[in-house]
Image (cartoon, each protein chain N blue to C red):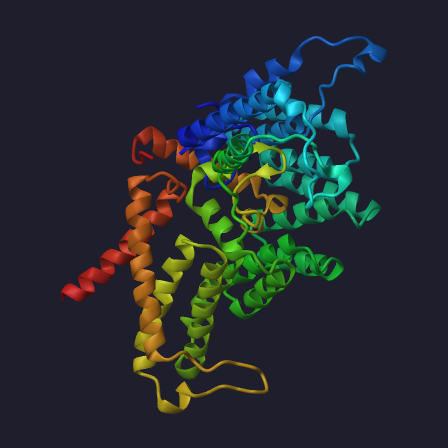
Length: 143
Length: 329
């Protein structure tokens, strides 16, 4: 998907550059200096007063369309905005829980209500760790 | 893999605790570096939230592993930075003293220090929490409950204190109070899916002692709470496991229930009638299917499914195995 999006972007850019260059070249032609008929759709102030061939206009529009599609396709995956989807992702994958800086990332934000850092029983915690270490030394638990 | 210093040590992650403790030295040396004299030092930014969070995490991890020297170094740094009177630092100092206390006399010294601190300023909530934690640690849960009751009286929106109180009550076997406390927690944090599951677990435990219509009511309440936790969190292993167990229990209870109990819905208290047999059976099937999927993908460690704890996965597998055994017979 990423390769396709990049290809679409590059193609769009090429077409746009080509269309712009063609428009510039066309404006240098002596035939384009002849006055054009006043547009009856656009107001006077907005009338570009050049008669570009239709293919250049179409190429410009096509290239812009390609670029729009490419930018949308190459955008990163959307973040979940539904609570249950977001929460499910935190429960399911380790990657989603990773803490990258203070206040960003981390797993269940309510895990603190069961871990309760303010009421940390440090003596029981260090006893628990000691037991775990002994089990590890005994090779009883692998994971 | 590099150690993530920002991930604090918890009871369920001894490996992270060990990694933090082992990497404490390298972190200290990385923090030393050179520094400029005073006015110029202002241009050097060595401050970051991450730095101090790391100090605290290493402090707690080294206390767990018993490396008290490294813990002392961290505590010194934190005290230098935030001052002796900082509420959080005072609590950390208390933790250090508790961890290094060798006998009950020293623990009593720590308790006396807490009392003195609270006499000066009774609004030091971190110290009040430490006091309750110490009481629980030395095996005086009833005193700890008393402490906590006065704490939540003073600060009724402290969800952490309510949750601790609920845990203490549940340990004492007074489930009714524990359920009340957990409901208070949910009033403060209504979207906490793990607390919904916890409340369901406590309700289920309380249902074990009951009989007849009471039990039916408690079981259906527990089932509804598990459903809510699943509603808040997709693929919640704990929620589905609980749902499977409660619905399994509810199926047998509904089978033996009298007709009058099945239609009891009390309009004055707003109690709902117990769910119908068909819907309970459907929920049980759903939970079994979901658990099967979670266990399969979680054990295989599929991408995006590696976050479940091994213990919970094992419990789910055991529950599923029990179920198939029953069917085979």
